[in-house]
Amino acid sequence: FILGYSEVASHAAISTYYIGWASSFHLFAIVLIPITIFNSYLSNMLKSGLVSFLFLLYGLMIFFLQERVPAVIIDPNVQSLSNYMNYFLFFMSLSLIAYYYFKATKTAEEALNLMSRTDALTKLANRRYLLEKMKDEQVRFLRNNKPFAIIMVDIDDFKRLNDKYGHDCGDYVLTTSA
Image 1 (tube, rainbow, N blue to C red):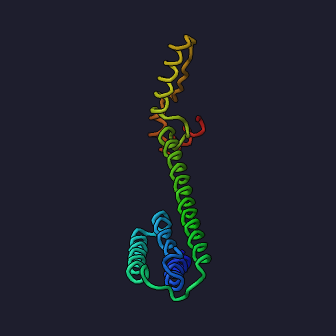
Image 2: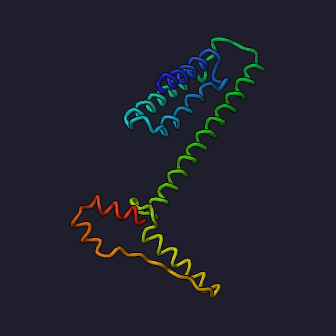
């Protein structure tokens, strides 16, 4: 990650120095910010350092390179094409970052939703979910006037079994009964 990060940051700075601010290569330094922040493999301290470096780099590019005459003068049509291409790549990169961030957020949200409705040991619906379903079924009963049934299962003397043989045995009984 650091090698690619360094390559993109240096590419943005060097290209802006040689071809000029109007080529829009400086935008690639900005794209690195959300990539760095959303990277779950980096520590917060490293993220802070990398983002601070990018702010410093971009500030220096603005200060020294924005009004500077490019080191290499290229054809205005090529310059314009470079500008449009870099803007296109910039927005595509941000769109991909946003897409994958949304996808990761949605996946995490679905996992949390499932965890909030099920028992971790038995993978059966928990009390909260059962109460919600009972309310839904009651509303459906009142609307359609069709009967419904509830079946509850209880393991007699489970506490005594758990106390006598231990929690591992009790967990085994629960998971096999489920």
